[in-house]
Length: 312
Image (tube, rainbow, N blue to C red; front, side):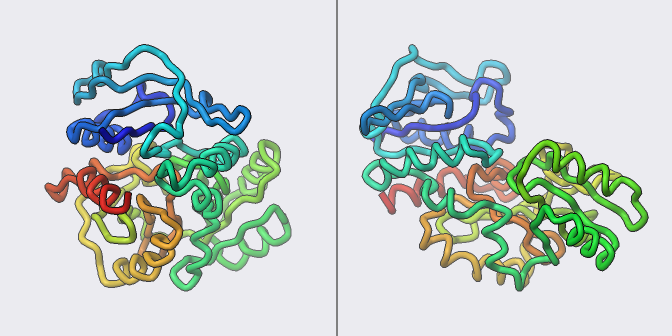
């Protein structure tokens, strides 16, 4: 029996209608896999042994507030597992980075998806800069002078944290917006990290395309439309998912990035594209599988595990 450990944030409180990890775990149980769930805080490294305290997943079902049955708490040696599914949500902070260092000790004998070394080496908003020919103008800095210069040139900009997720702390700064310095003060006070400043893409009003790639192959896409009056289209903050047919440029972007993803063993990846410009390459815990499966009448969770079975 294939043994799989899932490293993720609290499974008890997930949205079972949209959560990608839930869909992957549900399919894994259907295949007869043995599933063990643990929270990232319960990962331990002692004298070369890597353990996790968690619980066996006994049952999963799409029933609100009754979606999971867990076994008794226990601690396991993670080297006893065949696969570790790394589905820990950002922020991509030192906690996250430390966990990738620990899990790297296990891979590839215990196969970790996505490869923890490459997750660490491909921060989602930095890795994408390797493909600047497909990107909107983007600045990463804490230098106020450079930020003001960028704002003067492009008029409307987007500010966002370098290692955030889920559409949090994303600000649309308009041409004569008086709050630019206030927002910058906030960023600089809560973190010593650089921030991202990007040319505002008005096409976001029509939606932000999320494309799921499985081992470099296009598995499907959705269009995420922001609520009226907002620049954020993330589903976590009220964005609406719509069926999406990829255009020629979007396919070109996927094909340009795919070889590097395969090389790095970044098997489950989400690309974000606005108006034919790529803005992020999500490698930590990309979402969208349930929505794409529903709109296209496919089972992307099955495609994912088919892929893992061939690789492993």
